[in-house]
Length: 123
Figure 1: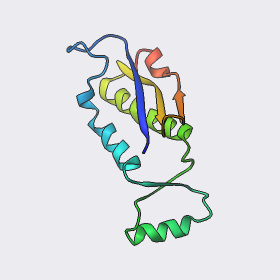
Figure 2: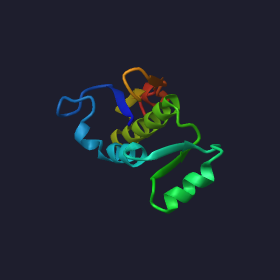
Figure 3: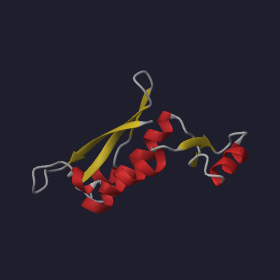
Figure 4: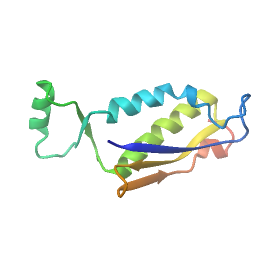
């Protein structure tokens, strides 16, 4: 099971005094659950991909095929979801600048990127 930590920033606090109102992140929560909760992740170039697809079709596992299932790529994927959601929802007033993906206590990676639209003051 992967755990994700997202770092958010804003130009100013919203009307409730928040950088990001977490109650408005249901879409992101759904994406995370759909991709990572009780699913079987496999690289698109996995030599056993057809067997995994057959097992998925039989209901034996819930398959997700990714370009790269590593923590680094998973962190980048979640960063894209979170930053896109906030850009679209908040009109560029807030953004996600970093995501950490953690597989366990010893294995974690983070992805961080500049938000060009955030720095420019608009989406």
